[in-house]
Length: 141
Image: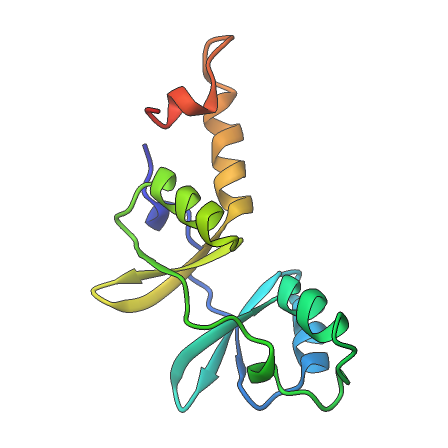
């Protein structure tokens, strides 16, 4: 079984904490991504996701042009070491209701993985499985 380090995206897309929600929306649309790391003084202090924008900014009718992303970001960051299994990552995402996990090596953030990355991996390995094989058996459950 592959570790989440094997599924992670190592191109870290970031936005400064003082940037607006609208700037985050624009960047996500242009980059075709669903989450950005929020950066403050060179450190990652949170993550802003599509869900944050809908459930927090839109639902509370915040002004996208003036509200900084730090007001709606998810914090603290949900992290896992790159050596962890996809099973552990999926369990964490389900337990915490997150779709994205920051991936670390030696305590440093080196990438991000998403529930979509894990689903794509499951589809890939599932295509080579005998008929009747389930995703639970692929994860050793």
